[in-house]
Image (cartoon, rainbow, N blue to C red; front, side, top):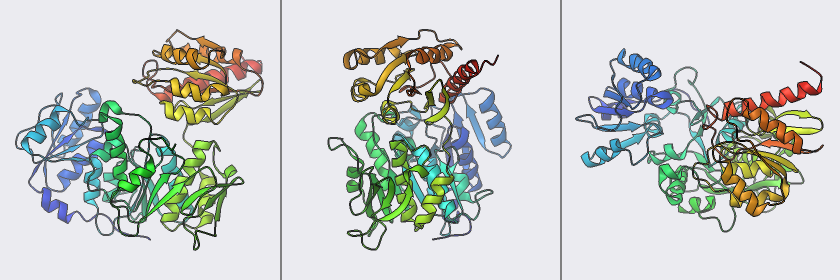
Length: 493
């Protein structure tokens, strides 16, 4: 179950030595990819569309190592290219890849390069993807693995390059196992990936402009199951009419002999599932007698916060950890030790008996529906950039929980129209301003709609870039406005 040492790059070095490798994009993924290919003896050219101050700094760092850089043009393929390694932001239809296809040049993602860098002593991967909940689940998984005494790191789409982790340099040397977050973008370009075990948490329409269709998006997610060695973890609570379901992706996968399908559910688990019984997370998958036995793992109160979708995240993390041989006590201890990142159903304060909760990370309808399901009654602050989303299903399923709604952002009218169709009796306040004081106005309007015992919930169902730099800034603005309300109540100036 443990491993030592770093990646053995000998075979890949032989494959790439002297070849011309083009790395598409810089940043968190591109910089390590360019350095790794250079280290393997390739002749490397990094191309990047932007040529501002940040890319120029990165270019200078690469050029000092002898790596070629071309800024301002990421559309044309450099001459005599043998391989393209891409970062996640490039669409499959990008001109660079069209040119590569015409020239017969293969395209790898940074995850594919990382996977090929692995050696016989490299740590196995426990991989997680899904429309929502990936980062939280990977962080929970890492906490559980640490509680079992294993050396691990949460890497991948979480913001830590898999290439750095696989190469085993400080602080990633000597790890026993990696907890890996993978996006659909990364999986699209990773045909060789074969994790120890993997989970798809959920599927909902997202990034369709990148993938082209829901079918292509789901197929990219399902690639995480290919070649799984021990467990393919799926969401047993997928609706029966969902197309596709995460279990369908397991059925379609070509896995290693003996790999098992393991479900997780918020209800009582069937054999080969993890679930919840009387407020306790239980395991009927990794026990000697799955038909008759259930192993207690943790209590719902051990999960922070104990919202339904976060319980599902915890069950998925527990399933992957159990697939790796982690004892039940480590699941409990790891979940107790875990604290979620900011802006993920974060309780900010109680003001006059009303709870104010920041879920600015809920940037799509699927995440927002899960957030709304955690509270009742709710004054909902919503809106921003819709990214082509529609809101009728979200509003129809959540209308009974709503005390009132405050709308903000560029596409707030789309949510307003859905509310008029499916929740006509729910009071709606429209905040038209988009300046720096807009969130404070929204919080004050929500306060006017709320009653004691209610929850004011920022779960926008939209991206933030119309008004804020990112969802973090949006959540910070909400928290600041709530703290200002609380200070007024205490008579502070």
